[in-house]
Image 1 (cartoon, rainbow, N blue to C red):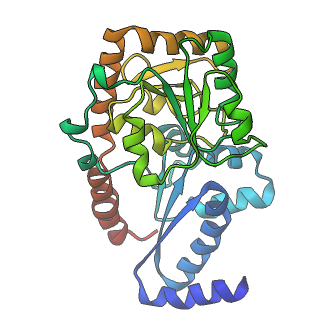
Image 2: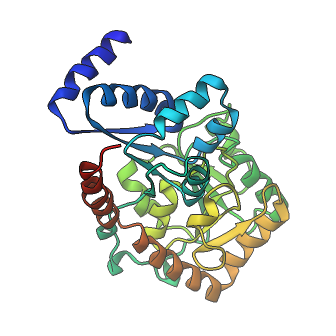
Length: 300
């Protein structure tokens, strides 16, 4: 480990700005060490943190952890994925240079040719992601049991976790497991379904990429009102939000999306419009040209 950091320190002499892209767990301590190294070498530091868990790490941090956070937030620029995280850390580190850089996608992927029509819906719902309890799989299975599999059909795609097996999922009435889908095929898959179902309770939830990919196809999202999800899924506009743990509310939301054609059309249009906001080209220009230019011109 020391050899690795020594090599990184030597490499710093050939650059002006060091950029760290990391999850919350890695960003805290790696960012703190990089802050010390960049200050020793006279370089600038930019840290982009993925996901929505950084505030949880801060709340649970001990003395050493708080010291690491203090060093991290002295970086020249901090980029956080959610508005909640931006506001939270602006309050805790008011002199830090913190910006919001959401998860984003290439909007050129979407075109009117790919936009779904009412006749393009297959009458089923879809879950795409890690097959685990904290992503809401158990909540979906319970909703299918309560709602009745005569109308409520859900297809699952993604890597299996928490002991789930294909045989178990396929044995549940109204449920089908379709395996793991290559990432470049996910948007097209999502476009075949009535809505994406994501009753997640994953504590590190930020802006799930699968939500943006669903939006790119005009596929509404039914999700829990949890963590940063309401920042990206606007209730009644691009999807429907339900309280965590409320099975009946989830069933009713799915029923509304499936049977209310006017509502589905409104949500589908809202999803497509919402997708335009997360244009990777716009956000990357803002982050890596506008904000980076400011970093190059400012020394803390």
